[in-house]
Image (cartoon, rainbow, N blue to C red; front, side, top):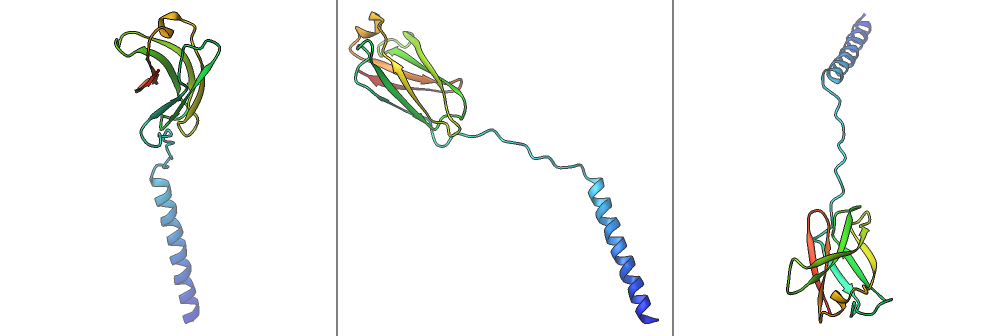
Length: 134
């Protein structure tokens, strides 16, 4: 008789545990994972390879890293003496790691080619970095 009492107690305990787990599982709302947007790695950086913008038919390379992933960046030429004198000349998109490599064609505009030095400015919707280019 003692064996059947222990078995009955065990069965009641298991059934009670199952009911408690079901009650707990159904009384709380489901938790949903929220996908966070990718974040840039490090501060944004830009470098320019090329020595002149005045050689029509040639190009210079603009490298960037640490920018927000999968976003459009714009490349401007800017007058080093006048901040309001600038022109968009190219655009591209950062990759999933926030990096980009852009081969920018040199401009034939005499306004820019006549300057001894210009700024290459890379900008997205949130930030801007300027690099001098002779």
